[in-house]
Image 1 (tube, helix red, strand yellow):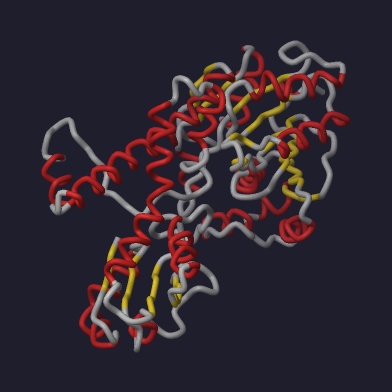
Image 2: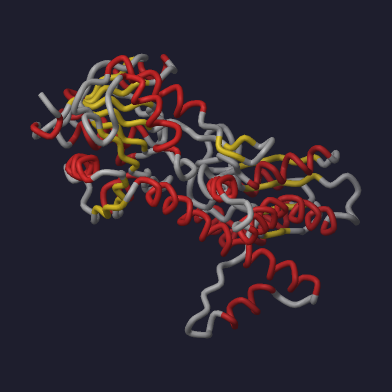
Length: 405
């Protein structure tokens, strides 16, 4: 029976990590029969045992839902289905700053033996524009089926925010991109089964591009704030004061500078735009370079601040890539600590939200007999402790020096 004749579907989700597993959970909760496919047998076993490896209380509640437990299972290889969703990583090849699409290609190849007329294939992974048309379509059509005629392909970029996965995946607007109206309609019907945000219909290339635009916008604006901070320091004026005053203008909203950018999107996705059009992405390229320089700049600031201390012992707090999450992917804080240690500095690194990096007892004890406390990521709990116990922390430090970025 063709997919468009069904109220509920048999769905295979290739890749059950940060993107694929939440999607699989929501689809299972909506009543679809879902098979999560992952090459990691530990992940497969965990899903079948109802264990959530992607952290999130709300997601664990969904995993424990009886409907989900009944409708979701995992295995290491694909099988026949009505819908195939590909949600595998697309890491950056740092040698040439281009997308590594090997996992997308492998995932697409893996489903070809199981495809039949009427199937829908959805790519959720973030990719350079034209990936659906130039990379996936030739592989799919090796099955003898024709995309847009008797098999259907759509790009529906993921909507995941670490720390608030459930709300984002359900309530955010979703982009439904495909080169033909049937693929658009089929994909929209599927996401309409659990998404409460608006479904925005477009073509596949635009959908691929829009996802990159979103993260590039943020990267460029962060880079502007970081560059303004560097200029303010050279002028010996307070960056925060200058930015706050500028933001009093009704059409100005400059972000606050930081230590760089991290996560699985912002430091990676802008390079995918440059990959397809280097000539017209000069601003994007410059923003990437500015933000990638920030860990080195922050490292130098710490070195200057501690230059009069003999063999300084530094306590660094914060390892996540942003405040109030435990996600350390592409974290500039980790890079700063690495740079300091590579130059011989003694650095103890803590993060109360990251497993195995919490304080042995508390922040005061961690600072005892150390020389400098460096706050790299301002988690709410860290700021609260600092505000409440600042004098005790200063008393515990051999040199009363606290640096906040």
